[in-house]
Length: 86
Image (cartoon, rainbow, N blue to C red; front, top):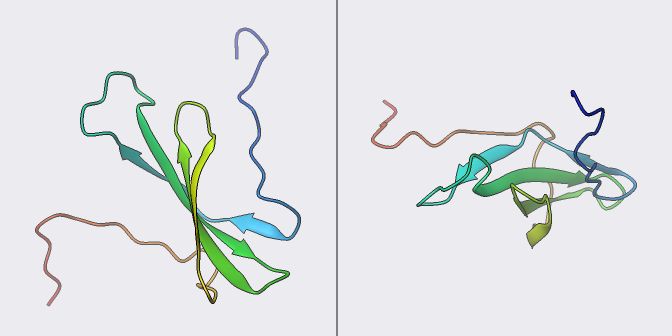
């Protein structure tokens, strides 16, 4: 903010909407952004969803997992090790 610059904006194309991003750290983090950003993308024109994995430092797309159907927009969850639901 002091320099008046910002990070690049990542878009996923027209009609595509990103859900809440999740940061997944690398096993041996060296820097604060040493990991991955995973987000669910809803493709409204095709009525389906993709999971996209980006490099957290550069925001470059590393992997796109194309799903055959859609997940409800804003669908999200957290994994908690050792938690067992009753």
